[in-house]
Length: 317
Image (cartoon, rainbow, N blue to C red; front, side, top):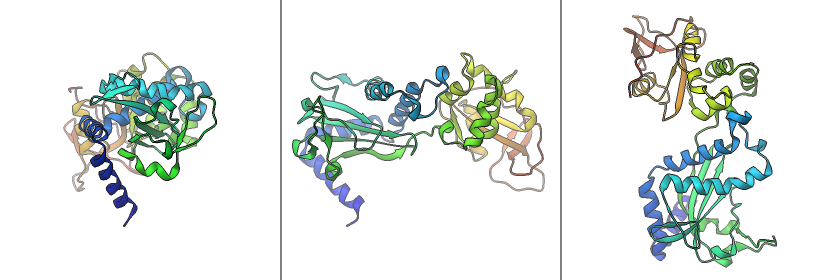
């Protein structure tokens, strides 16, 4: 029997044996079947802690110890805001009529379980910006499953051999990527070498193409209150990069259609995708092309001749 099959059997047993656990599990799965809402909360929480607009930070390691300690509280608050969980009486939340405590760790398995959570169900959350992965699962806390700690507040951790008891809502799911953290260091240095927010954004859209770029990345690079203005035409990156054959698609429906037709990632809310394009010649065949300004365009590659990029259509939703 493989590991995944064994885990499925264990999960089904937990659902059958614990009606409260099952109620919470099914309620949360109904709220967020794919985990996308949960992933966005975690992405936004990490970005909130980094506070890139004010600090220019993009790396978890750059946070102060006090900020990292505070991360669990911010995750707890932001999840409650997103899913509108009721307040618990003794635990953090009341979900499907059951008390649930929320525990977050940036290190997998590092959840600190307080004595008052004994016998209760915990929502265990993990996210790692370096791996671009996250997990969230449910576990009813039992004393025999915990490491006996000696810290002053008596908080304990779950024994590694008992982590297979966790009922996963999502496990090792994709966390929206931190573009600045994962881009080549030489490209990142070039982006931040410019003295103005506009020049930094222009360089970002040159260097990061065919990837989703979040609003928080734009905010961190621009470090200006009017950062969104710096993306648009009429002096922003769209007009500045037009002569380099680069278009920047946002989350408008018309832009999303263009990205899909070009075979690019489709921008989600608050995201942008940059690409260099060229006109499709009459003798070429290409599955991924978009009609703009009365002509058909494809993504440019390698040594393709740079052409003036087409103007994107009106920003209709």
